[in-house]
Length: 195
Image (cartoon, rainbow, N blue to C red):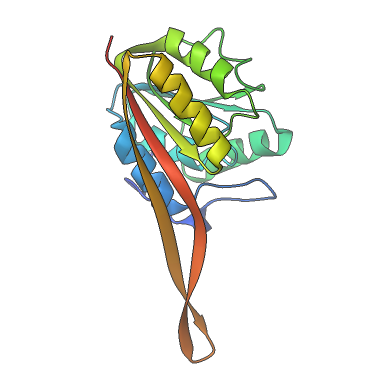
């Protein structure tokens, strides 16, 4: 794998299409929270364009990243983005989670960006695959997803978790002025499996 970036690939580097993409600043915080090591096995659920999968693969250089995505356009974008960035340790799974997770190996980290209203089922399957001291990082855009996540973690006392809400503003030139343009706020929930 040729490494042009170590963390924080510029958004403009990704082929986008019509598939949602996790923005650079959120990717950096997500990957930092996942604490991915070079030999780790990582799953990216709802991988979209593969932006988080690519960032994770740059950290797990001697490991493997599984990018699980249901959207055929997303599948093609993940492939194209990995190829464009010279990343060769991503395996793509086309399925709607938790389907597609049944044959995965034990996991060190799981990134969940899209759950298709099946978050409890995805977390159950994740729990069965996650090693002790493994990490789950959930990027929650809606309060409903955040509430489902918290309810699950409170019912499963083997997890420690913490939550941050992030609001990013990017500054753009508008005529002769600099103007803030807000990126949607997001809750990042970092969970660690204790036993």
